[in-house]
Length: 303
Image (cartoon, rainbow, N blue to C red; front, side, top):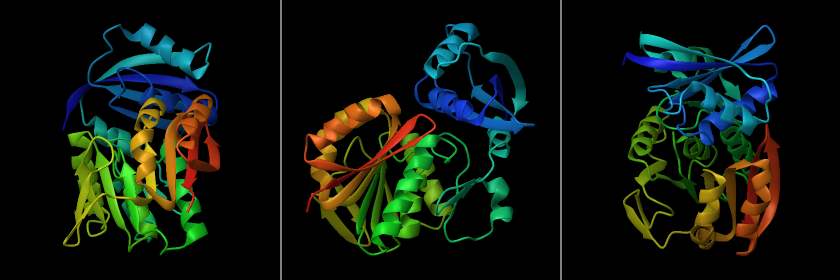
């Protein structure tokens, strides 16, 4: 669909800073951009943040607040208008494949290049969050890989991707635990629609059930059975720190004995507070990974 798009372009010197700023624009800024892409050019980096409408306060205050979040004193930013541009296609074309420990995440524009690898996941930038270019999604993929390598393909029988966004983490779980029941839930109806499309596109419709839910789903229908009082061997929640703390009373009872929770969308300085909400309810910290200013926590319930 071709629509007029406002584009904020920010030049950054190093990769770490550009990824941190991309995460801030995506997760912390209000309004959030409709899409964010990162480009490298001769050793320097650029972020393009696309908006259907300019922030109500204007350009300069928005850029200043984003720079303050990122700890930057001097930001080179430009605003431009792209009239009658298919900006979704433009953003997708600027996103290269991302390779984690097990998974390769790519857009449809790179499908021919990637081929039919078993652990490849095709996700296009669009309305729902999650392409693996963001450090929080990448951190979750690494945590899923660590879990799969440690426990093998059969121990995990039921997985919940809470706040699924694009469905990428549920699809990743289906890749490494093909016999598990996997539920992907989100409170946002658009995210549910996008996740359903991605599940089908990635050949995971027989492994992943997508549901609209605010918090832990109360029931699931898969493979002709109805499950109530759900408990999970693995819950993955890539959201934000405040909702993760708020959801702790729901999430912790839903973890099966010996099961795990993977939490992300957490700035490093928020990790201790988020972890405390789950540790105080009987979980144990198993692993804490940090990527470009963001934390991914893995916690376990005792058997």
